[in-house]
Image (cartoon, rainbow, N blue to C red; front, side, top):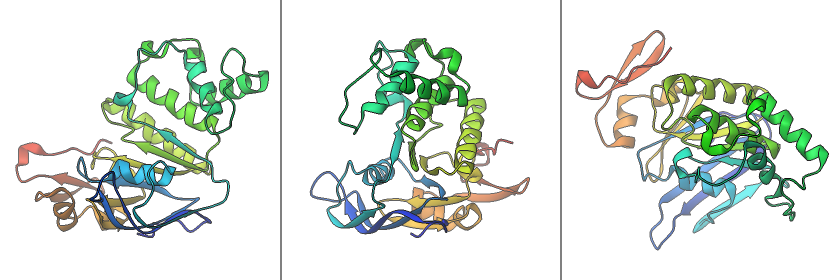
Length: 264
């Protein structure tokens, strides 16, 4: 998989096998990530999407193959919302500031953060439209606000590469649109983005580059190249029909009542 990026290369996976036991979850993965890339990774549960993100983060080491990264590459990660302990007693600003201690050798947290660190946290919160929520406990946030907070936490690290695991899982249509627009703005500002999603119509169809994964790379390219019946059947193990609707591709399973609508 080479992707669609044409700018400088940030990270490369070459013929990588990876997993957590004797059998790999991913096999023979080739991936070149460039600084101008905006990619969605699609596939069923258990197909290796999250493992691929962890490889890019360096959390999972390859069983075979090689990974090379640009020296000093700054990455940031936004987890699935349902994996977070929202009862942890911390404010939005504190959560963002804690990101600054990761990998820096510093364990200085709020209220011992410097004035510059606090200003930078406030600026990131303002950029995402949640500065007014800075002193609110994270358990009091809505789903959309939670996602914006974790984006702020990631951006506080000033990443070159932003990785997101199912960023629209469990949120409503309006929040999904907000997240898509935010990510598009961040990408326009020069952040490379890779995200996982199972949402073919609401999310994947809106991205410029897609990769289908099911323990290996099935296909990669534009939505027009990837969202095709034969590719989706190999990826998801079920026959799906692809229709054209308002210039976009709509994925339908074999039963018409299961139409997965493309949101405007």
